[in-house]
Length: 337
Image (cartoon, rainbow, N blue to C red; front, side, top):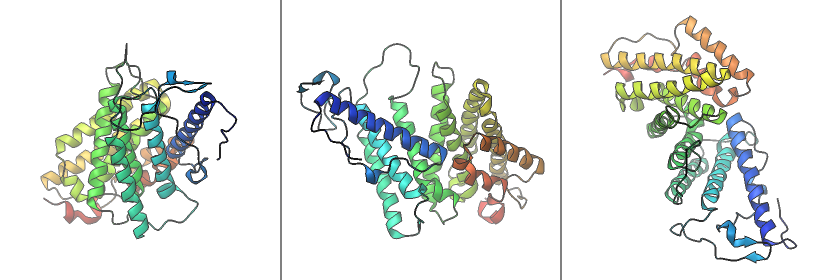
C-alpha cells in the first residue's frame, strides 16, 4: 500500500498516516478476536508511522518543531498512540506467524521457533519503552492508555503468541505453560480491580479478552503438572473467583455473555476440585475433565450458543479439550504428591 505525499501539505500527510494505522489496528484486532484472516497484510504496507510530535506543531504550512526521537524524551500528544500502533504491528506479525491459514506452518521448524522467540523479545522491548503517561482529569470511564491497559495488553499478547502451542499437544515446554498461566492470572486479577466497584464499564472486547485468559489459565493447570504444582490452591481459587466475578457482571449487562459465564464457572469448579484432590492424594478417576455427562451436555450447549455469536473459532481448540479428553487423568502418576 503505497502513499504518494508529494502533492499534499504536512497536515494532511500526517492525518492520512493516522487514519491508515487506525484502520490497520482495527483490522488486526478483529482478525485475532474473531479468528479471521488479516485484511491488510504487513508485507503490503510501506506507510510510515505518524510523526511523534505534538498536534500544535503541525499545520498546512509545515512542521514547526522537532519530533521526539528518543524513548527517554518528553512524550508528545502522539507518543502513546504510536506506541499502540507498534503493538498492533507485533500483533500482525503474531497473526501471520501462528494464526495464518494461507501457508502450512511447521511449528517444529527451527526458523519458526526462532521467530516466536524474536516476537517475545519484541514484546519485552515494547513493554520497556512505554511512554510516560499524562495525568487524567475527572472520572476514569475507560482504562485505555493507562498503566493497567498497557500491562493487560502485554500479558494478553503473550497469550496470543503461545496459545496455539498450548492447544496442539506439541511437547510445549513447561516454561511456556507457566508463562501463560501467570499472564492469564494477572489479566483475571487486574480485570476485577478495574471493573468491579468502579465507573469503568466492560465491553464486548473485554469479554473476549477475559474469557480467553480464564480459559487459558484452566487449560494450563490441566495440561502441565509443573505449572499446576507451581501455584497454591488459594491462588487458583482467587484467580477463578476474580474471573467469575467479572463474567457475572458482564452477563448482567449483556445476556449474550451468559454462556461464557456458565462455561467458565463449570470448568473452574472442576479445576478447583482437581487441585484439591491432587493435594490430598485422592485417587483420580480416568476420563476427561468433564466426566459428568450432565456437565458435558450443558457445556456443549453453551458452546453452541457461543458459536451462534460467531466467536467460537477463537476458543474451540481449548474448549474441545475440556469436553473431550484434556486433563491429568490420562497420566495420573504425574500428579501424585
